[in-house]
Length: 267
Image 1 (cartoon, rainbow, N blue to C red):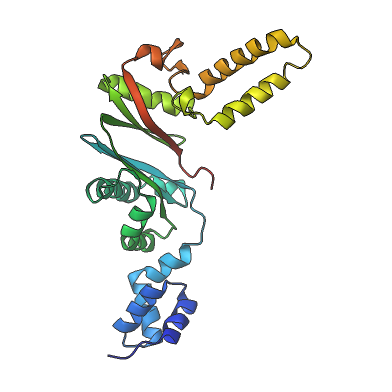
Image 2 (image 1 turned 60 degrees about the vertical axis):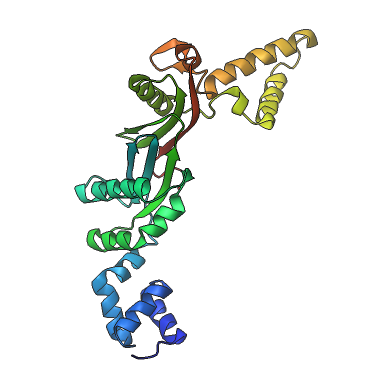
């Protein structure tokens, strides 16, 4: 077996754009022959995948899976809406969700771990389909109660909610739908950082310039209360009846956490 030097690995990397470890493996497989290693990388699809890795991927899908009190959601991105709608891409997303649920024990963000664990499979798919793809985000939640999820088509949104208390399947789905439609920033006012509330109070007070000092506090408090109704899940007008709210509809239900992702957002 030929001895593979760092210079050989670096030269192959410069010619193909492939990662160092894959370059070394290719050189070992080809007994140090540079041209044969390039051909090897092309045949396996790795070189093609790496070449496409720099291209923008802002389309994609979400995949979710819930078993018992464990739920996962995965965002898989590609370059075009056409590929995002293909069965092979959707199946890969479903496979990622299954792996995220069964192969990990985490309770929280697993984006980096899942991307690393599925790197080779993703490269194979990139080589097969011909578009850049990547696992952008993934979360795995273990609930003390139950987890619900909802995937919205059209503009793709992925929502996952963790709740405790007396929450039936219909109510859990409605909470997911509400999060999708109303995009709350917080669960309750208690979850809002003090500095954020202070800034809102400052803005509200500035809007009252010229009014008698005796009434400014009451007006500011009223504005803050109204603002809570805009940004807090439990206080927003309820999706099924805008004259009430989640805290009134389901006082025995506690939302512990939620996420609301849109495909490709902030890219």
